[in-house]
Length: 103
Image (spheres, rainbow, N blue to C red):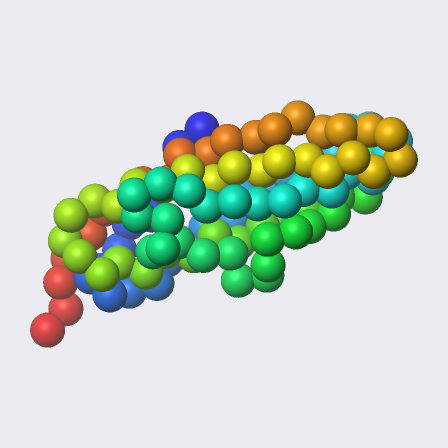
């Protein structure tokens, strides 16, 4: 899945990624930002999060544009074993586009 960040040059755009846990066990994930422009993306609430059984959670991904060229990175969500259960590893493509420049 691709998450697109569109905004003005030097603006910060926030997108939410909603994750569901359909199992009866708690899932824990480590988030990693990788790629050419990974430094332009951030996870303001930290890189580790937990999803309670039969619940969902949202994580915020922030992007601040520094250049006019499109930025690209990958968000990897790698599960940690909790109580003998592993979640699936999830990947999201992060792409940006600067739509306008404010003086």
